Image (cartoon, rainbow, N blue to C red; front, side, top):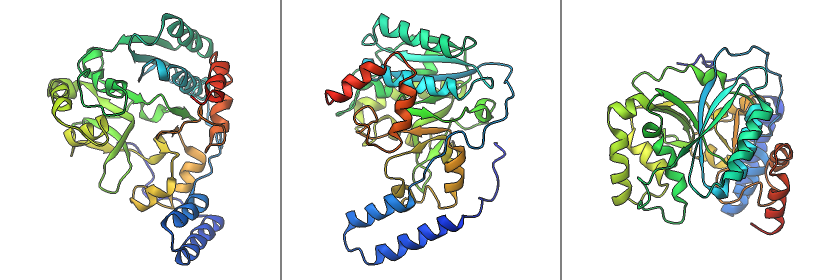
Length: 324
């Protein structure tokens, strides 16, 4: 288990004032949308990247991580990787496993490999071919690439654990703390987005050894053929691994979209503000709208600063201007 502080830090005077104003204004706001608007602007967390700076102490061995994507998400995945490597400089290196299909061209693969080599020569990037186990699953309107994370126990038989993250993410710190996390009998570790412990699957520590030994992976393709979950692979992981999921602090998977929603669901508390402001590890742009759709977006300016460091910046700008 991680040595997380048992009690949260005290709220600042400003944060207490924000909570007070939120309660008062919402009393006089009959509209649900109006109350959500108030919640969003008063309770959303302003993130201060790099404060305080992390002490420099190089981890001796590389950390195994994975990201999965198709051709549509390859460039954003490059931005996520750039942010991870920049914020891990002199502290950690990575063995990066990318599960991708044929829509990720050889040119794009070479560009991503070059990006990793440029930012950190000690890190490596390997591509794993997505198999066809989930081609017939009930995906609805989402891409089948969302199910690629479920392939990791089968595609990485040599690894016991791995840290997985979505391509629509931005890293503000490394996650050395999780590199040696002992999952014990737990199958997953993730950040809850509801008070009942239901986790978001955009950031996971996966116990690949137990998922293989207990043959969970072998049942997942069949489940996706007969079940149409509202949240697809995320629901599958939550229901299939129920009772054996270790909960991580919200700083490891801070969902930008409507932070006030997570107050209402009981997954984030006012006391988490201090931790999120100064120690957010991953900012997750979940939902339909992304920073590469428009620049006037929560924390999108920071995302574009990292995008500028990649060879994909001009392509991403052209995509945004074209409305894609």
